[in-house]
Length: 400
Ligand code: SF4
Ligand code: SF4
View 1: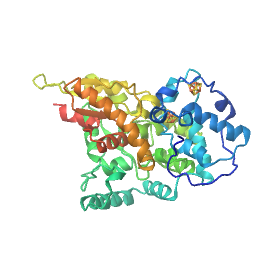
View 2 (view 1 turned 45 degrees about the horizontal axis):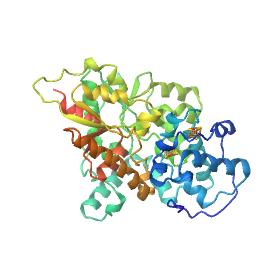
View 3 (view 1 turned 135 degrees about the horizontal axis):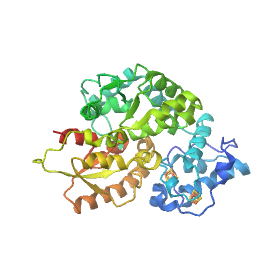
């Protein structure tokens, strides 16, 4: 039976997709990506696979097929995890193809519903976001927020923001993560400073990197936010990011903006674990009298498949804990930025597979806690019942 994603109500229309023909032609249809695609794994349907989505893009771009609800469904149900990219022997730049397609659909108002666009606009206004988050936290306490949207318990008080102590490195704090997981930023700063480095923070305007906007096809908004973010952290200091999705987006500013300034900025961006792993001996010596806990590591897709920076997380954790691996070769958890809110059924089915892998890891070890270096993944998995912490929350707790 053909399954439909949500929001398939746009009607048929012929439209042009802004796709690069050479990139679109690079898929040879071998199917090696299929087992690495979470939506194919849960549906078993070709149209919900990378190969099927590329074939659909070709029929629209090359054969003039109309953009109908089925096509939009194929594109909107892609988690944009990019698990298909490293599996592809032909090097198909699937991420570019889906981002360009989503951009074309969003610009033609064929996707990205109005409520989502409104939410995206709020992300660029940090004070408004903080106030809105507090109101949402109050609404949760009053049981006014339906459980089915899968939101974890938000903090009523978030404590002090990260404060500058010098200029060795920038700590990027972001929008949603600063509003919902500020404690992780404080832990991150403490771990960075335990190496002897000092931290700077972005000037006003550098609170949202635009990653979620790029995902949603809202490229113009993403470019505006990227330009603001670049201006907020001048100089040569490294920019350390503790959210995999934000780091991946900021490393891609060169492509998004196409300027030398943006390329220079992107070259300064590191996932914070990459920076720490290079200085692992500078971190405090583990207390030999303290028991080393076992910690399960979940790789966010934008750390593993996009940044290819998942191994440094293990190096950092391994200084104080024993790392337990999952058995699913980094298959997506279904969080995907706003995906879990927009495609809750599929996101839930994809998460069930990840939770099964976590259960098996718990049964085979003494571990009960999962480390995830992306706020979206950690909240999505926590909403499914897993105990999830950021790796640097764990390191901060275990450091003498
Ligand atoms: S990005 Fe992820 S969900 Fe989308 S086609 Fe590739 S593997 Fe499948
Ligand atoms: S995207 Fe790559 S792995 Fe998948 S079918 Fe095309 S060529 Fe093969």
